[in-house]
Image (cartoon, rainbow, N blue to C red; front, side, top):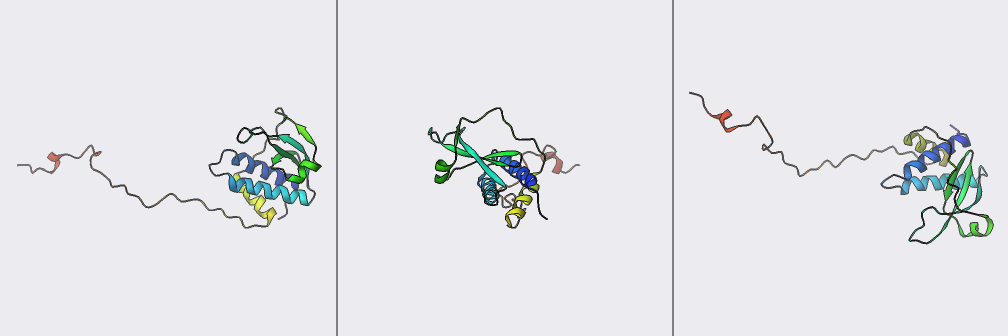
Length: 152
């Protein structure tokens, strides 16, 4: 199934939104970057300019590349070539927001994996099954010494 660029952009948006709050966002950001790189290669996306980063690392100012995919805009790390070829736009425009969209993270991953031609692995991490917990009778309210005593 071929996806439209707008559908791929929506999926990237969902992946990016989840990555911002994920405990381990590396996989999600990697998917986003691979998809945007492929879209740029296919000329389905375009680099708009460089922005100063909202959250500088180690108090050092750095820039990110603003990329347009359909009606959505994303920031990706710049290459050395980007500093020579892409115009610097200065500060990030805080008033602009991407269009709202509804799509599950699993659906977004499925769309991007299919677009990238990589297998989609929908594995849920199972909780740790081995436990050192030993049940105790201390918390049982109906347990009493007198329950086991013989009645005469």
